[in-house]
Amino acid sequence: MKKKILTMVFMLAAGLSVNAQKKMGLRLLATHIIGASGGWDYLTIDEKNNNLFVSHGSQVNVLNKSTGDSVGVIHNTPGVHGIAIVNALGKGYITNGKSATCTVFDLKNLTVRSQINVGENPDAIFYDDYSKKVFVFNGKSHDATVIDPQTDKVVATISLGGKPEAGVSDGKGKIYVNIEDINEIVCFNSKTFKITTRYKLTGGEEPSGLAIDRATSRLFTVCSNKVMLVLDAKTGKHIAKLPIGDGADGVVFDAATKLAYASNGEGTITVVREVSADKFVVEKTVKSEPGARTVVLDKLTHHLFLPTANFEKSAVEGQRPKMISGTFKVLEFGK
Image 1 (cartoon, rainbow, N blue to C red):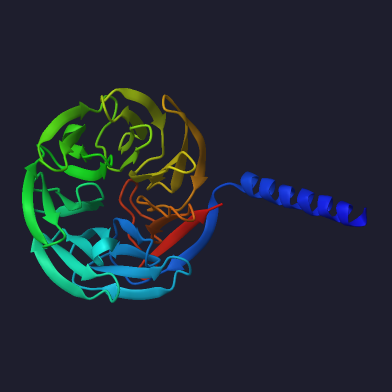
Image 2: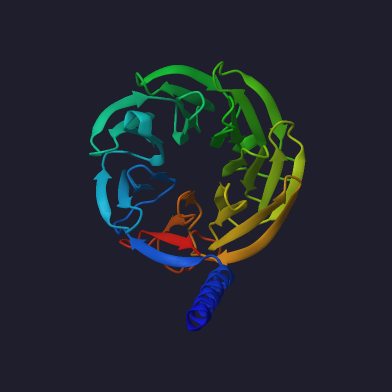
């Protein structure tokens, strides 16, 4: 009888603990200080090697994503924007906006293998697990460079008709990319490299971050006029228009929890729940820090990582605040 009572007490305590964690919600778990000066853009996670890659000035800082400890630095990446991971080949790719090149590096020892010439001002980049190609989106030349990671050769250049931002794959042969200056999402075939459709973003201005729910074929795009648009990837139909914070430049979707997170440069994270394929609601707004405008999701822990720094108070209203040297950091959020 006594053993039975103790078991019941333990189960009750465990239940209360789980409920308490659920109620606690998304919160800041850790701040990983990197220091030094320079701007930043995208982050990428290498799940296989447990590393977090952070673009920073003219280099990429590599952290152990579990501890935040420095693993190494990849130097000489002028105007760095994005990082793509190809675990099957043990390689990574970095876009260098100022040199119109893509750096190829070794995932194990972080040494540079080669440089690939791409379009002008290469920005976002990702590896498509379906076509087995690396796609680089070039902001100034308004096109996408396609790299075969088997050979590290450019196999195609796709004219996009505008300034591309982030891109995603549906895992079935279609690539979607935001076109910032004409408020569109362009879709092209990942094997023929031909554009198939263009979706006009009604009510959305200057789209930047883009995410996808492959299970429901829903696209999430964040726009400069403080809205997230949800579209049907197959038809372009607008499903939802949701309010987010100012200065969003990134969005991620967690397929396991059905939550989308918009990282807003004003210093907030907008959490959107996918109730069903046709119903989306803003669940909450979580405080982050000013400047934390890009984000990456750790699919294993469901944690979010956002880079930012501390800033001086601007003497002129509306003027962009100056970063305080040595304060660059990565914020880690989770439950």
